[in-house]
Image (cartoon, rainbow, N blue to C red):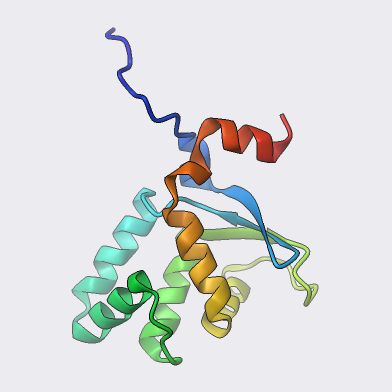
Length: 135
């Protein structure tokens, strides 16, 4: 077996299953935006036509979208594949896909935070994940 030539110390488990980060006093568990589930969901959304292409394009470029069916479906995809858990939500509600969809649909700043965190490779480096977990 050949030696690995990788120089980027990505924690694959954290990338695909999520890593914890704090946002506004709430701990969020977020997966990397390159995880297979998210890539599949984005492709499915883009295949649905122009309205979804606009939502995806707006989201990826940071445009605040008003609530629409397409935005809700985009947030459902995020809740399934990017924002996968939370702790200490101020509502006291536990994490569920439905609750996460509501959060992401109603709170654009949190939605953008999740997207930005998921897109930043360094958030999924082995040394950062180890420090976050306190190991």
